[in-house]
Length: 293
Image (cartoon, rainbow, N blue to C red; front, side):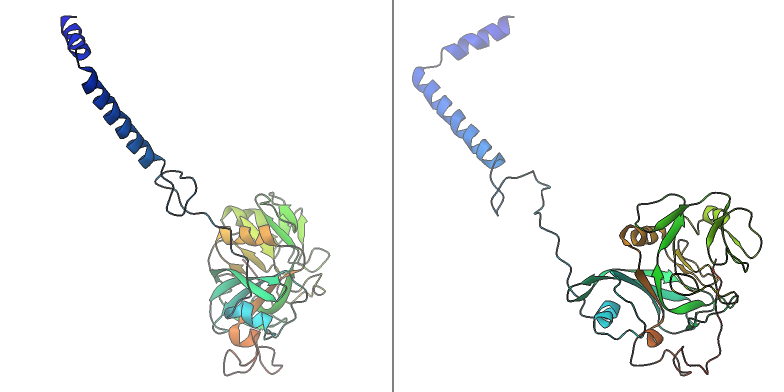
């Protein structure tokens, strides 16, 4: 008790002039500290601390100046893409490849903008002939195909018709009313058990490529069936395989009638063939087509 009281008495004995000086210094110091803490950032405006970053409005998409989206805008795609709001390309450097690049193109008033680019895998037989790829050739068909359906474990939010899979979910491979269609019930080879393939990680999410099926064409047994964009990033029996996030991105953005364009670059775009054999739609070319996995 004595110590503090003594310090208090000494403090009260300070002269008036000294006290005025001390108060003035204290005020000056406080103002200086406050000024540093609330100083506006160099560009003006409020500060949100040392980690604050300048905000900006997202850039408006503009027509691509190179790549698949630019060539689509320039009319250099051999296949009809109609009035598709989005076109997703799966392109390989040559027909024999098993690797491809996915490019999503968004339609604008003055052309198509590139949205994103991702790697992918295709059928272990490479790309097949245009629209006539046959069963069990392990090829991915070449051409332009609409997207109208998707399926998987849970609807991620899509405007496409969507099937949440169950143990009874199948994709028809037998000639008949279920051929190249989703159905629920007992499946028999070569119907695909979608639930089992989902549990293996391939069909966690998938988008149907409307090759050899309505609304693009009638379904013809003997031509390939069950062609999807799906997860797994692995060679397939004819599907296009990428990572799950990319499939979900396609599902989120797609509306019925959007398109896939698949094939080797020289067969998809005007101005050259992918190999020395001639364009993939050459009637003289042999080649057969697909079944997915």
